[in-house]
Image 1 (spheres, rainbow, N blue to C red):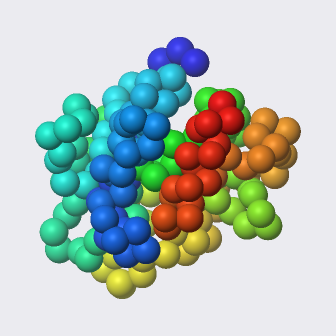
Image 2: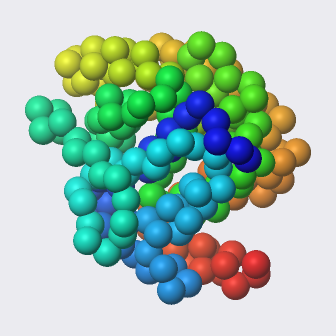
Length: 195
């Protein structure tokens, strides 16, 4: 993909309750999860690559600080990234999602509406990866002020375009696989070995 009118935001500031450690630093096939996603992101065609969360000296990136007045959450990271973005659109993904396919990103970019674009997978909308308009920061600010942190609520408010045919590009749904537990890490390692 050539340069497009969007920035890429990688969420890397979560509490990682189920893993018990900072997921961004977990090593998979010789690289950290964050490094895997940074490598993938260079092929997606964005203008800038931002990482929401604490700076890490082991991965070169443009870090975006989460606003301290809100509790840690994915929504807070998206808010920080949208405020830091210099593009009208931001592709948001997680540092624990090392298999996002370039073709899925291209498809979401092509179908976006004024509320953005996400995929429909496993009978629900998948907020990540997804395209979000810069104006979504206003919606998120109101949600954070009301202590509402669920990404599903954000999608309800934005009403993004939903790709219901994403299985044609990603039959296994690997683009939506995120590593939340040690068992997920084992599955990711097996997937890497098969590649």
